[in-house]
Length: 448
Image (cartoon, rainbow, N blue to C red; front, side, top):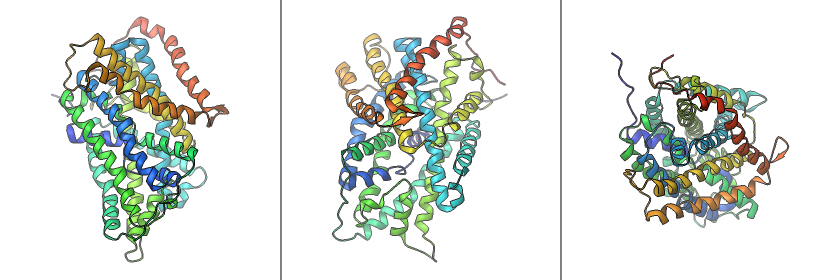
């Protein structure tokens, strides 16, 4: 007799959330180069308070009250109906197209520091595609396999930074000064990089049915992950500041490797810390992508069960992994390989931000419409607190809209392109009217 797949516990969920949001301080180098140590550390310290913590509180309440497959899609659908539930899923999947192209780019960037040929010609796209489908195969093994791997990878990728920070603090350089910051435009770009590195807290909600005691586990995991992510961003930069290494050394993504080489020195002619940081960078990109495959693939699964997508997307294997959704999503993500890092971040934040605002609205709507809904955790402050908690994230998203106006995608202004992506969700909803009319609900136990 077959047994049900084992579920994720608290620590694997913390690790999976960590990778869905962070994956270590990789990718933050441009923030310091543009802003200098002082402003960069201020941005890294303030961003989790006004961006991450409000989102984590919202996810903690809704995740504990409605621990359903599909997470935020199910929340919005319950609060505001099928139309807005569909738009929530559409915006998240559209954002994922740009978000998920970032991690193969970072993986290839670090690999090229060990094997330069990996960064030449068309090789970055080939390496990125190989990484995408390797993660798809890993996800076919189920949520517990992904969560367990995330727990191990979190410890391994952070080890070089713990080592580097320790070495930096015991060998400080006298008279260290921060390099000058960039101008206002550069600071805005740096804020967007910080927002990207601090976003994704709701992604863990889509696997609620695969988490042990989700009503209690989600709030604990969210708060623990906020503390872990913030610490792993701020502490390494503080440590490097005390070495006297100028902020300009953080010239581009991948600069952590060069800085590790400066701090660690050589053993037997090998810059050992540089080597470990490069391996950690590859692991970070792989781990983040792997965890997010698990999250995003549950959206088509939940939508198919609700009759909003063809029922083929609800097919699962013996480990409860939605293998059709995983493969289709992986193919879509592979198509965006080759876009620039900053452009990907700008579009990702814009589309993700729109979906996030729907979730904050859902928090308020459910407080009004379903005040008796059992909530293991509540955002403090009653209804006013539920309203105010979304105002700071909204303010930061308005900054993202300003930046979107300076980017171009396929010859279009970034703001216009993002707007078209949002409006196209209305058209896709209309096109799937026949599916909803027939309302095909797929059995959970369906097997291929």
